[in-house]
Image (cartoon, rainbow, N blue to C red; front, side):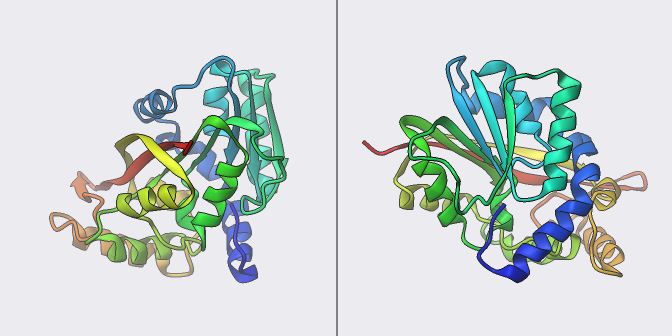
Length: 259
């Protein structure tokens, strides 16, 4: 992940150093249906060289590794890279490498990778276009760039953002699907694939992997419970027994460089 604001940088490092282990263990982040949809949209080939930006605990990078020539995962949080290395070792993958780095200043030459991806990172970025342009720069002329991130409905985005900032103070701003597509256009990318899925979660499981400010967890519980049957947050909060279930609305946007 990446930011130009030192205060926001500090929030990212503080939150995701603490979240590294719990985040990696949230089953929804490795859900088979969502991962199958993602891999189908990315259409990796055995000759692809891949860069996974803001790779976190390496879930996407390790899912791609058996299907491509090589993968490099980059993240600004050392604890996340430690989790990624553990995942790689557990899976016995030899074609993955990890690097500490800033997504707004990718440390690679132009056109270094055939597939450049990032998942669940853009809503943490103060200027996601900077990162998307960097991803485009390091992508080969005939390669693909993919962003996978939460994309709430336009009329619900503000309420969604307020709730997410309670859960995770490093949340900056979610982009709607229209805004994501506009970023691709601004970065010189032609969209060739657009897909959607719901990332199904249980609120308490989500909170166990989060570190809100004191009192924040109770505020979020009350907010979600009040939203059952109303859906002002755009996540379809529902009660199942004593559990509050919901689904983050996620967009997969895949593009190629113009020309």
